Image 1 (tube, helix red, strand yellow):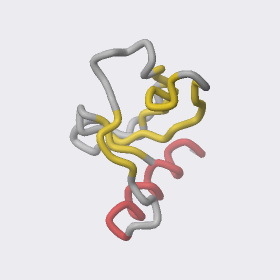
Image 2 (cartoon, helix red, strand yellow):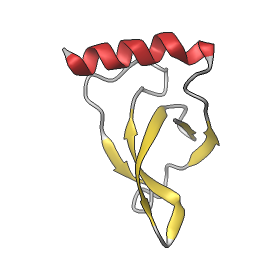
Image 3 (cartoon, helix red, strand yellow):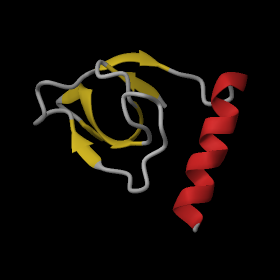
Image 4 (cartoon, rainbow, N blue to C red):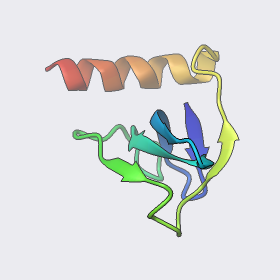
Length: 76
């Protein structure tokens, strides 16, 4: 899980061998950390106004509730 410069949280699902710092990600939340109903796929190698600012540990307690909400919404 990563934090983007927009404040949104995303998960990396694919990488570019020649651009490892610009992977493909799926947005999990809005910039306000509200879970998204549909996870938008974004290629950071193409979308130049978005980038990763921090890698996050999804096991961190502050993310547990948020991730459960996201997983419940995608299963529904």
